[in-house]
Image (cartoon, rainbow, N blue to C red; front, side, top):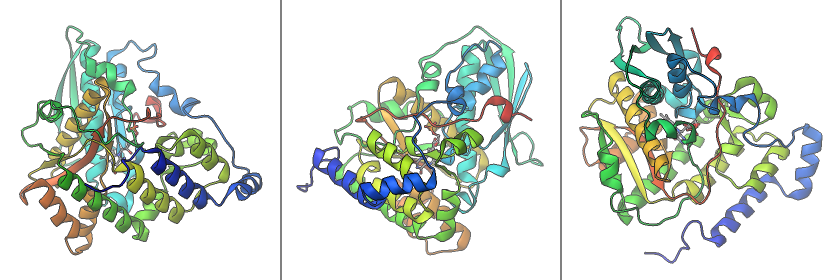
Length: 393
Ligand SMILES: Cc1cc2nc3c(=O)[nH]c(=O)nc-3n(C[C@H](O)[C@H](O)[C@H](O)COP(=O)(O)O)c2cc1C
């Protein structure tokens, strides 16, 4: 054990605040920049971009309740890469390839996992709304964008705690307590991974957590120094209220997990460059994102299988919904897996590929979804969503 104060300690919070302010350039520059760029403060979670979180709202049609839940799912960079064809008897789910993350997700692996997350919400919500949902994955080999077909048949409504958690689940990027997890946590997570293909690795010992933490920090550095990845990631950053209202997607300052003062200053100081945003991300990865009780990996035998990616997405979403019901926070940390994709695509030295095999303890399983779990210091804020009528075909 080192003598470093635990993350969350006031000294560390003050330090990270100070470095953020330094990065922003100091108070006087702040005000000058705000005035000269016309950027301005706006409150979090207000306006049409956040309206879909009022779920189910007044909606009574089961198929629309199901899709209204699906669009609230976790998804990579909040690209919301989904399209739905909706009838009372059937919902078809398609990948929207125009929402690709480019070099950040060159294999479209994360996109497919995000579609699996949407599917999981859809199924719990259909059950609550009185519909049995029978899912067929990848129904047509000739159309790889058609990822699932869900047949709906009338059934007794089955409300559930996971259904109730759908509008309360948010990715929490703030600082977590470094407290040991409850003894039952590992078992509770394992028993909620229903899919035999999906393997859960649970890292809780100091040495395991340190290896995950340093690997994640190194992978973040590799990403921000990879111009293409850093650029393609930054394209999805929404800074102003106008950008948010127009796109209703992407990553926002309010969802970074930073405190209220920093978020307010960030809004008025103006849009960061891709390099500045990358540096803030790296700082936050060191200071806040790698705190928590445990790190987890979901892996499958065939990393490139779209079916297995969809199953991983379903499992992740289920775990996050369950964590929400017991007051635990979760946060995907996929930098190492994103670098593994890059190594595979560009034929690079398999540095992170090997690191991930070491963490999983097998080179027969491929890492799909990495995340942390723990007790948060603060609640997470919601991220924007496109409404159903923007994502139907
Ligand atoms: C496949 C996948 C990969 C993700 N990877 C990361 C990640 O590496 N870092 C991160 O902060 N969030 C990651 N996320 C979380 C998304 O950014 C988040 O779900 C999205 O912004 C919507 O926000 P919400 O989960 O609060 O609704 C990932 C989500 C999915 C489904």
